[in-house]
Image 1 (cartoon, rainbow, N blue to C red):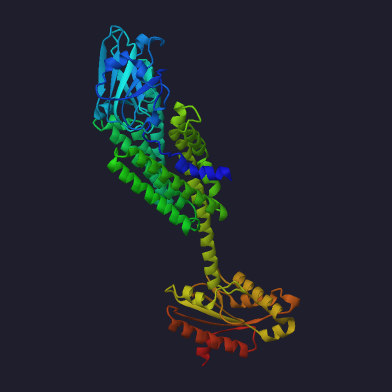
Image 2 (image 1 turned 90 degrees about the vertical axis):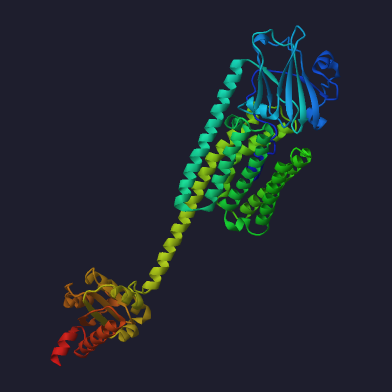
Amino acid sequence: MLAVLGAVAAALLLLAPTPARASGGVVGEPLAVCVLRAEPGMTARNLFATPSKFDCQARQRSLGPGDYWVISQPLTGLSQRERRTRVRIASLWQKDIALYALYPDGRIREFALTNRQTSWHIHLGAIVEWGLPDRVEPPVRLLWRVRGAANLRGIVALPRLALPRESERANLEMGALYAGFGGLCVALLIYNLAMWGALRYRFQLAYCAMVASLGTYAVTSSGALAWLVPNILNNDRLRLNYILLAVAASCAMLFARMFFERSVTRGWTGKLASVATLLLLSETLVFAIVAPWNMRLFDTLYSACFALMLVAMLSIVFRARQLRSPYLWLFALAWSAPVAFATMRMLSNIGLLPWSFWLDNSTILSMSFEAVMSTLAIAYRIRLISQERDEAKMQEMAARMLADTDPLTGLLNRRSFLAKAMRTDEEQKLLLIDLDHFKRVNETIGHDGGDEVLRIFARTLRLSLPPEALIARIGGEEFAAAMPSRVAIDVETLLASIRSSRMPFDIVVTASVGTCRGPLKSDTDWKHLYRNADRALFAAKSAGRDRVRRADQLATAA
């Protein structure tokens, strides 16, 4: 049960609201940093000279938003220091940032980035990277000035000093990772849109919307958007992260609602899901418009809306379990990997687990697994729906057959017989066949025996008459057969077959037959043919039964 709950919760946990902190290729030597809140008159030279002013113990996130100076540890002890010319930090929400490098001769070089220029320095994984001059002696210390830091996830996060080849390798690895995920998204979109074109199930479109929004989120959160649109403000890219996460979560909720039977989301369960989705989208829209004003408050509300979405998703799971939905187990399997990684990410966000590059990128990895498994879940769902549809068609066919046939003998009933017989323009031959002394049969062997006689009689007619003949039971012991006039039939052979049929208690049953020819295109034609055949049948019975009379012979005799 816990696995099921966790699996469905993963749709929200996986999209845990941490968009302000990027996932990046963490390569190079890590740098320890200390923080100082900025005050008027502070300069890089004075701060390099007085590193004791900095706080090396406080957690950055606890200091709140504002302007800060962040100083690194001395760099003199790093291996291959002279070749480490790439300074890398995670991209965070801030107005602008400047890097200062202190060299052994006392010179300080400044590398300032506005919010737009930050996008020019974004590498895959949303890592901001500076390239230090490689033809001078390496710096001994680094200092960052950050203005307008939202400080939701930190001020200067994941600072590293890397070799150029490490930076290039990180871009290649992240490029392969995101390209693989993008290719998977495109393939799944094409597959499911093609399936939707054939089957038209609404949950297929919801799934496509979820995959599309996650694929677009991968473009923004990876930093690739800054490559595609170099002049975009970095904060606008992060703003898009919030929006796309909310859209992806809403599509995941919509997919879950449509994937299960309608009874699962009927009533308060569906209303809760609708309210949670509406609140999340509304809060995200307001946040995107007013940010960075009171950003921490809106970030908290954003997280609260995700929590409400989680509650709504769990209610759907509980309801699906109560109703024993056959789709629940595969849905849970699809979300098993995302919930495991998402749980570890949540523990990492609150400091109970150490930060890990692959854990921070688990969204892409786990969603790749989820996307494939959800496609299998959709295929399974479609298979069950197809089975239900086929069963419904079979039942409809059976009901139609019952409506068209006589339940005792399996022959056509009067209505169906006439409907089928009137579909041709050919002249028809009509036979009225009536069992002789059937009342005496019932009195001799009982009504159950009489019913068995009728069934054997009907089987004899089917075996003895031509395949083109339409055969029907139109009364108690009265039967009719219609066929094109060109079809030859030996009625005497038919009578002999009836006479020799093995009946209950070895009784001998005979029949009388009246025939006529003529068109059969309307009710008027039917009444005319039936009247003539009935006259011929009466003549056969008057002549002693167990024989045939033809209407044209009666007319000639008259």
